[in-house]
Amino acid sequence: MQDGAAQSGAKPQPLPEKVSVTLTVNGTERRFSVLPWVSLLDALRDHLDLTGTKKGCDHGQCGACTVLVDGRRINSCLTLAVMRDGAHVTTIEGLAANGALDPLQQAFIDHDAFQCGYCTPGQICSGVGLIAEGRAKSADEIREFMSGNICRCGAYPNIVAAIQQAMGTKS
Ligand code: FES
Ligand code: FES
Image (cartoon, rainbow, N blue to C red):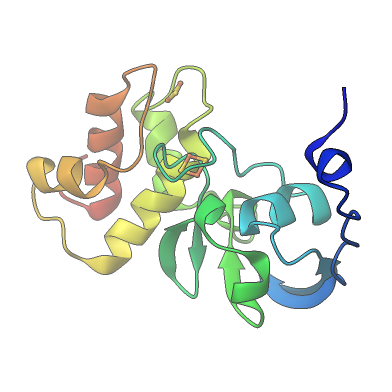
């Protein structure tokens, strides 16, 4: 079977040049070159070997890929690495400091806020972003502002309890 280009007689187009990108990832400057369509998620996982950030849907619908960019939580599958040149990125690998877990990481352990764990890096990065935003005051608001992070294991009550603990509104 012939492909579309062969059938139409069109010559295959050469790949575009790779683009140099510099990110400060978890406090360390990283420089790499990627094709222009590579997502930040794929750059982190495939170019920087930071596989803690997970790919679920790759379409902005599950939140598994959530990281912090310049302090704000985003779905890394929905942004191109080249668009973030010069940004500061924090992934799940960068949350612990001086050998101590981030308070929300510890709270996830304390409250058994995961089962398979696949959504957990995204849940924690999103929760850290939410706490920094200071918007959520109640369990209902936590649920609302975390609604972009899907947990197929249904650990939602424990996730909310962990975030409440990290916010200091629950022990
Ligand atoms: Fe990015 Fe699902 S992998 S939102
Ligand atoms: Fe399994 Fe959330 S812990 S998907």
